[in-house]
Length: 210
Image (cartoon, rainbow, N blue to C red; front, side, top):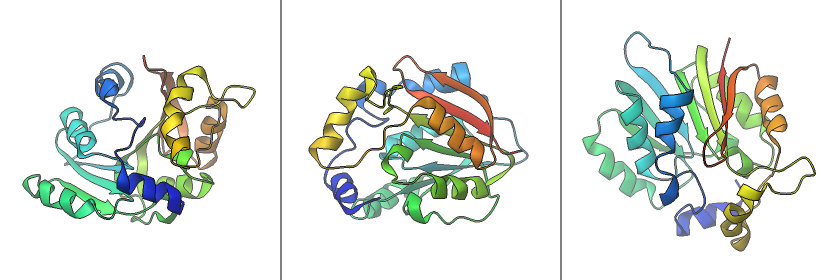
């Protein structure tokens, strides 16, 4: 992530991202209607890349109980406060890091989530390959994109308003159509199990590592 983007996230709440106030019920729709996480022996290990706010991690645990959850974020100044708050949650930890330098043990997580983070990466291929390495065989990848381009490359109608805060603060966003992200995920070895749009018109990919 470039310096302007990092500065933006250090100083401001992540406007327009997954946890906008009007969209906190999105998980209910995703996990109740679209996505089924297969049971595992022992605790489920989950990585949430670019979680933005601790509310996202708490909400994930509502739908994925018996989970050891790792949240990865680029925040620096706020990470210390997050870690202090999380002392009461024995199965959540937060790690400071960047998608461009993702480095987790190979085949460690049962599930990796990234909610609207890849459009902020200049070249999504390296972080996607790193995500693929971190997912166990038969593990899953759940990605969302609420900043999408139409066939002509211009922002979709639902993306225009969400783009405004990024543009205001000089944050570069890569607008890509659904087909681009589907191809990118398949290219790093995932099998697409399902793609869908939620009521908010956010596009999701649910994939498995064979």
